[in-house]
Amino acid sequence: MHLGDKAEAIRKLMTGHIEKARDSYRIASLSADPVNFLLWSHYAGGHRGIAIEVDIPQDHPDLCELTYSDFSSVFTDEDNLENDADLRHLFNGKSPEWTYEKEYRVIYEKDFFDLPSAITRVLLGPMAAENHANILRAALPSRIELVRTELDYEQGQLRVLSTSATSG
Image (cartoon, rainbow, N blue to C red; front, side, top):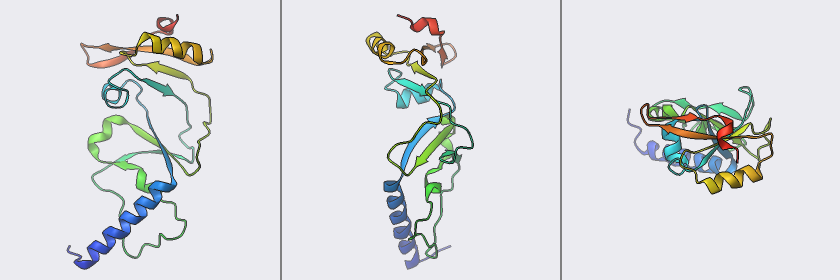
């Protein structure tokens, strides 16, 4: 279907709404898979970072599970989005090649998100420096479990080691 001149107007309208929404929300990306090899490669400094584990109830109003689809949100020139419409739906999808991330997002309008429960544990990447582990051990409250991960080269995945592997 060819929309002619209308297509450019719709594209500009869409872009404006997306930019406005992007600036009004805070977005935290989370994963249901704390030992996904690619996630650690892409987002944790090549396995040198950490992952912070938290429990957020599935029915939390600011939490959404991403939809992986070739299609994205669609607007038309008839959409009345100039009011305070909830535009969070613009940020709850990705294309299918990202499915491995098993991503959830907290999409929030305020500056800070109050976790509904305490941090449960911190996972150290398998390449994390020992001095970073020591700093975390000293800084974290004793109720937060600090665990190390290791690379399983045969399986090409990460494995969580026992808690005792992180004790000083």
